[in-house]
Image 1 (cartoon, helix red, strand yellow):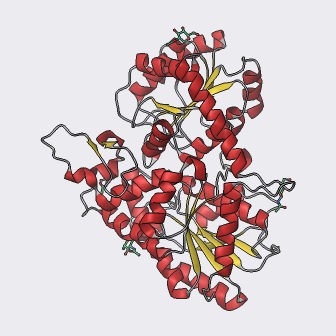
Image 2: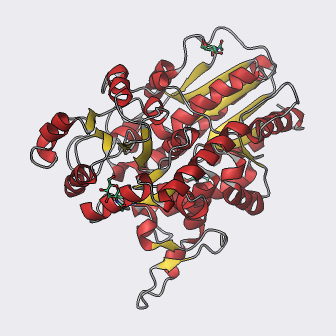
Image 3: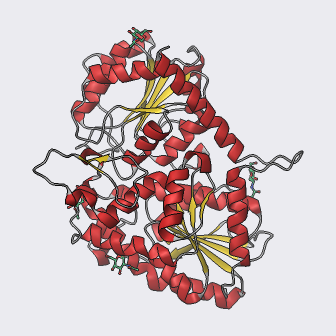
Length: 491
Ligand SMILES: *[C@@H]1O[C@H](CO)[C@@H](O)[C@H](O)[C@H]1NC(C)=O
Ligand SMILES: *[C@@H]1O[C@H](CO)[C@@H](O)[C@H](O)[C@H]1NC(C)=O
Ligand SMILES: *[C@@H]1O[C@H](CO)[C@@H](O)[C@H](O)[C@H]1NC(C)=O
Ligand SMILES: *[C@@H]1O[C@H](CO)[C@@H](O)[C@H](O)[C@H]1NC(C)=O
């Protein structure tokens, strides 16, 4: 791998932040760029342990190359071998984020080597947490874009919240729990419970605020923004960035990785799952999964178990140990209602999967009707690409605003709960499952709209030779590549 080179000229250097949720869309983007054949070489840069993981996720026939830059976690007060947010406690995440800015000299040197050795035109595609790479690119006169694996809408809320901290100006004595975003009024008001912990606690002087406020504003030195999204789904968020930064925002999604490349292979045999789904009527199954990194609290898990049973619906549930237990430890049936596992097995109503399930295959199966999800953007794109409406249970980061977009703007989602510690009642969950899955007016409408969104996504990635039609995402990618090509940057 990495020895062969592609057909175009120039080299694209991709630099994702060290977290699986960031790395996956970057790999999907690298594969898409390879298909476009515009670059002679496509390189993904990261630290040693992450490079190992990325290598195993890249298809064998790919010519994408990998470049390592040195990083010593111990120098930053991080435990040994922690180069990725996925295996460190949340309170150390900010330390890893701060530590990542020390990659600057090594990253700069790597670019200088490419420039001096190959005399190729370069482009840099960097993570939303790597705003500092924009100033490096500017100094070296290299074309630079930020690539967001998140939707424009979710990221716009996140960006605006960090820069303005509007909840700090709420009058605490009044009962106002809602506030608007001062520079993003198109988004409807946000509730205090829709803030991730670190924004809710931020006061402008803490480590998170200092990092975000400096590094997010550095995007202004970039030449544009790429989003893993689709124009017609996400026009409000994309417009925010165009207005705010005066930069082009190119929606080139959905970029999705096939299951084999997702890194996780444990869990169940995909065939067993498909066989089980084959035995169920069309649009009768609820799929429940909170993404590969999340879980819920023990009481929430009990209530969700009760709700699934009471609803009487068929379900596939990907379970992981609740909060407070090692997420990679063996699952214990005692975390579910008494006798749940046996009853579900006997009735044939549910299929319980430990740890990992073939999500794309499940969502595109005819038997699946709805998806109870944490609303991570990769999961949302997978659901919408299959025309499956959602029940949202956002937990962290911009997931709250993805859920908001799906519910308020697109009408294809109902929020079930918010966060990892909120109180949930099984009766309420059942009512929402019924709302989306039953033959009620709302349910029918929501499923119809989800089908429309699927068609819209298909259109966005369509290229038709007969009449020369190109979908919005194809055109956005064309525009981006041509902007990079024709830029008057030196390298
Ligand atoms: C690799 O193989 C897959 C599946 O056969 C194909 O779709 C893809 O275009 C190939 N990629 C390259 C770079 O040849
Ligand atoms: C971020 O969140 C973690 C866990 O909730 C907390 O320990 C840490 O203090 C927070 N940091 C800031 C700056 O609020
Ligand atoms: C990004 O944040 C880090 C840590 O707070 C800070 O040291 C650095 O100066 C910031 N980078 C830029 C380019 O502002
Ligand atoms: C939804 O359908 C189930 C069975 O098909 C039924 O028991 C339940 O009462 C329905 N709920 C609503 C809100 O219509």
